[in-house]
Length: 315
Ligand SMILES: [Zn+2]
Image 1 (cartoon, helix red, strand yellow):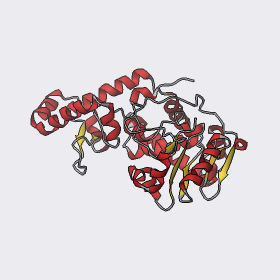
Image 2 (tube, protein in one colour):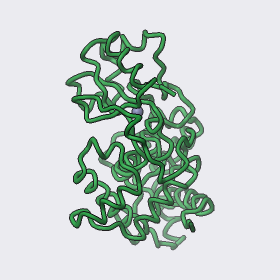
Image 3 (cartoon, helix red, strand yellow):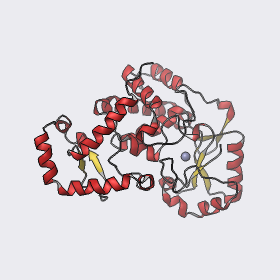
Image 4 (cartoon, rainbow, N blue to C red):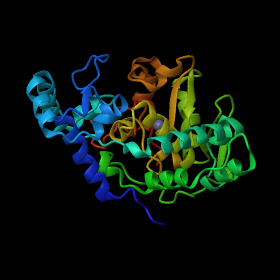
């Protein structure tokens, strides 16, 4: 299959993003507090992307002393991978963005995938394969067929080397069309999630026994498609910043949820279960004392992923 989202292109994209920063294409978002938070100007001003007027850019550099200060602060920060994962929701100079010309296709693909999830149900969607997603889209007019461009973009994202945008974890699933055998999983009642039978299930049951009834499963088995949906949604809320998205979510194919890991939380804690606040709960304090518990993404990990006190390593 021919891929145009090549490594070479990514390197070009990287240069573009740094050059853009120094010529003002990356602009400070004044609604944000951190000095490192910036957003690409193409989201605000399409003309800026095609602006090759170096005279204007030099003038911009001279007049924007504040911006230059921000850049040098960022430059020292990006040398430190730990700083990036600690500030996972910030933008850094080296960050790589989805090219602007792919934004529309990306958004239509994401919306279509969300329609698949709505149509087949949240729980079923956790296990759905790529081929079945395509079939559902064909079958249900309210989803609509995936366009060639949407499939090509999904393909590119799956096979693109995630190291290029700062994710250093392993690729644990090599095929976009890889399928999960439902018979090897079990649905955990009340959660809308599945666990693999064997090590994952026995670890979860043991955890419930040792930590208490308020410990819940917040995410279990995820197919490539489910991980794709989560990653694309994060990419959307990250304004197309692939690096930023991958600091919070493993790119599709790179998630250990596909082969055994799961997430736990505290009953009634809602969205805070996926924040560092989970580490302040009694449930966390109890589970971290258990000798058989390992976290996948520890504090100070070098994988390029934020600290995830809720993600239990199984494999
Ligand atoms: Zn997880």
